[in-house]
Amino acid sequence: MADVICLGELLVDFVAERRDTALEHVVQFRRAPGGAPANVACGVAKLGGSAAFIGKVGDDPFGTLLRETLEQTGVDTAHLAATAEARTTLVFVAVHADGHKDMCFYRHPGADMLLEPEDVDERFIASARAFHFGSISLMSPSAKAATLKAARAAREASLMVTYDPNYRARLWRSEDEARRTIREGLRLADVVKISDEEWPLVTGTDDFEAGAADVLTAGPQLVIASRGAGGCFFFASGATPGRICHSCGVPGFGVEAVETTGAGDGFMASLIVDLLAERDAGRDLGALDAPAFERICVRANAVGALTCTRAGAIPGLPTREEVDRFLAQVVD
Image 1: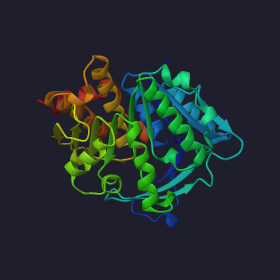
Image 2 (image 1 turned 180 degrees about the horizontal axis):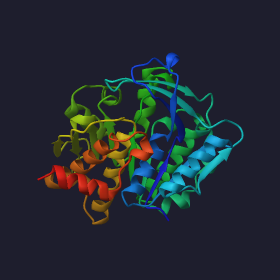
Image 3 (image 1 turned 45 degrees about the vertical axis):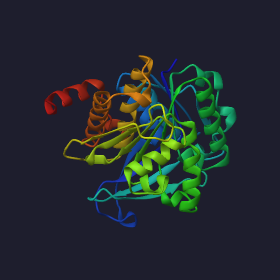
């Protein structure tokens, strides 16, 4: 039985070995298992939690690779389906020194898009303590129906529901469609993390406080604005929906980055583990005090930073012990 169930895309990234090279000129790629919700599941497992993953891969060698990767990391794959109707999704990635990435998705359709409501066992969802999803699985009709079914089942079973919207322009027909679809997930979540890149799209503003108030109005108790090396802002609703009762800004950590892929997912995994502990202790997530917010944010920032120091999202995710050692060195 898993503490945390993650649902969504599971795919293989092929990342350019040389930076600052256009995709059409890349000669060598490094294979890296990934997919944001799957990265979160692996992050939870590495941080000492138990995690399971719901998704769909192709009945092909890449699907086998992904299943084995999750299992080797300690993630339960009993609800990871395989299909012969489509291949496992592949993404080719060119990385630039400024952090910008060019991506080309082989997903027309990809197996992850064929996840169906029948693939979601509501009793399995109800057996967990937290449920996490993203927005990529909201793009195709069947995967969207499966995602919403799972999220609603999680809410009905009083799980902590977390949501991390992810916008990839080339996957959407328009920004308006992306915004409308992504915002559908807000009302089903207790905790929402939005990166600074997605913030204007999701909230309609560059202002963190105004955007956070907008998100909290939709129903979540907490909204976190993640800013990469810039740390994060944490906003809580308290007892009044749509109102910010408390906010906390926590700086990030400076590290020598090898690759940033998966850093936000590691950050999310840390949030889930620590917020779940607070919730299990009977504390209202929307009413946590400033020291609790800061402690949670510092640890999440550390996980994100450490993930950047190694290549590959899942291999780069740190263990609980590695995070403890890092924090002991950098925090007074």
